[in-house]
Image (tube, rainbow, N blue to C red; front, side):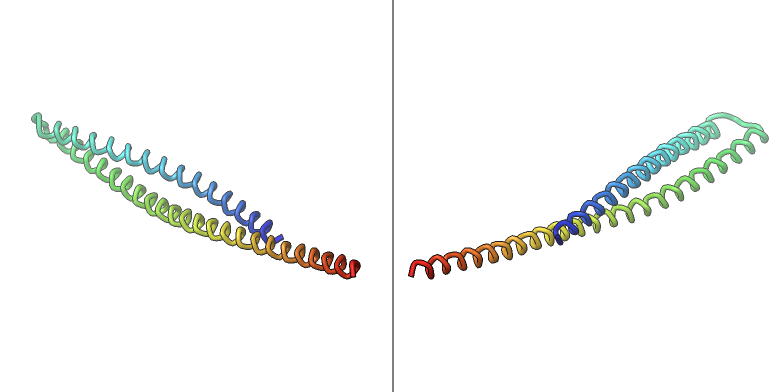
Amino acid sequence: MRSERLQRIIELKERLMEDKERLLDQHVKKRNAIQSNIEGLDDEINNNYSDLCSRCLDGNEFTSLIEYLEHLKGMKAEALTQKALLERKIAVIRAELYEMFKEIKTLDALKKRTFSAAKRAENKKLQKLLDEIALRLESRKT
């Protein structure tokens, strides 16, 4: 009976782990998308700096290019903030998964011990019954 309860708990923990793994995959995909966005912003910033340095610009072009570069830097800073937040979430989920794995392993070991203890108790009852039968047969022979 106890091993059945433990098995049910283990199944529930495994389902929770699967949900956490799905959530982890979603966060990793979001982080990777943000990382590719950051790389794209870096490329855009570098291209604009190259454009800034490679040709002569009048005052309006120079001002608009500088403002655009500041805008890109702001977008990059926001993306880096989002990425850091997702990385913290990923680390928390990984720690939770590790703890859940340890719990499942412990519960599985406990289930095995409970099962073996129940088996030993059953064997003792059976042995006791066999001993009683043997004693009755001995008493009938004499």
